[in-house]
Length: 466
Image (tube, rainbow, N blue to C red; front, side, top):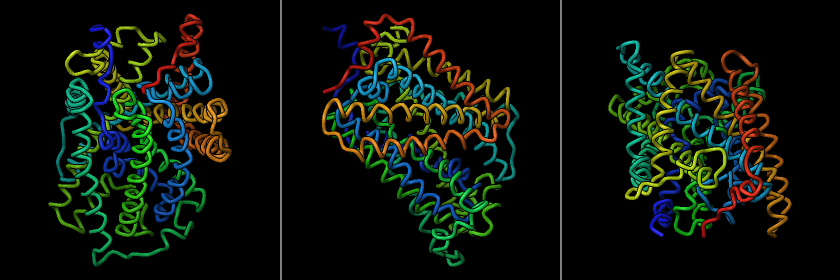
C-alpha cells in the first residue's frame, strides 16, 4: 500500500481557482499581449478587435470538446484519456503523444522567447545592450524557476499562478482602461465593423483570427490535473469555461485599447515595435505604469512556462503508468511533494537542450518561431483527433446531442485545419520544419504503438478519477 501511495499523485489537492489559473497561465494574457496578439495584429491591423470577436466564437467550438469530455473523464493524461475512451487506445496514445510534444514546445519556445527575444528587445528599447550569449544564462535561470516550482508539487505552482495571475489580470484591465480614457485616444466602433482596416480585408482577418484563436487554446490546460482535483468532473469543466471567459473578455478589452490607443490606421508601426504595449502604456500612463506592466509581462511569460510543464509531466506520468512509449521510471512520484519528479527533471534537462540548440542553430527569434510552429501544429492535430473521438464517446455513454457532439466538433476541426495551413503557409524556411517535425513525431508514435503488447495497449488511457 505504501508503494502505491508513493506512485500516486495527491488527490483532492487542487481547487477551482487553482485549476482556473492553471488554464489562464497557459493562455498567459500579458505574455500573449507581447507575442501572439502582436502576431495577430500583423494581419488584422486596425480590425484587431473584430478579429478577436470572431476568434472568441471560433475558439468556443474547440473548447466545447474539452468541456464535453471533462463531464465524464478526469485523469493526468488529459486528451490521451479522452481519445482512448472515446475512440480507441491506439488513437488515444497518438493524441497524447501530440499533446506532449505541444506542451513541451510551449515550454521551450516560451523560455527562448523571454531570454532571447523579449528581454534583449526590452533592454534595447531603453537604449542598452546585453552580451551576445546572455540569452543562454537568462534561459537557464528561467528553467531553474520552472524546475523549482514544478518539483515542489502542484499546490505551490498553482498558488504562485493564482496570486500573480490575479494581479496580472487587474494590471491589464487598468492599463487597457487607462489607454481607452486617455484624452488623445480616438475611440471608434469602426475597429469592430470595418474589415477593410485589416491587411487585404477579410483575408487578413481570417489569418489573424487563427493566430488569436491559438492564443486562447490554453484554456484546456486544466484537464491534466484531474487526479489531483477535488470533484474533478465538475470543477475542471467549470474551470475551463471560466478561464475561457476570462481570456476572451480580457483579450477583447486589450485588443480594443491597444488598437485605438495606437491608431487603427497606423497599426503597421504597432507590429514593427518590439514592445508596443509597453510603449503605449509609457506614453499614455507614464513610466511607472509601463514598468509595472513590464514586470507582469515577464511574470506572465514565466508562469506561461510553468503551466505547460505541469501539464506535460502529468501526461508523461500517465503514459509511464500505463506502460506505453515511455519508461516506467517516469511514473515515480516524490514521497513528500507528490510531484512526478523524475519526469520533471528529465523534461527540464531536455527542454533546455532543445531551446539552446534552436537558438544556436536558427538564432533566438527564428528558433522561437520554429518551436512555436511545432507546438501549434501538434496541438491542432491533437484537437482534430479529439473532435473525431467526441461523437463516438457520447454515442456509447448516452446523452448524445447533435450540435454539441457533431456540429461543434466539425466546425472546430475545419477551423483547426485552417489554423494548420496558415501557421505554416507559405512554408518559409525554417518555419516549414514545424509540420515536418510533427509528422516524424507521429511516425515514431505509430511505430511505438505497433510494438506495445496488445493487452497492455487495450488498457491504455482507461484511468478515470472519481
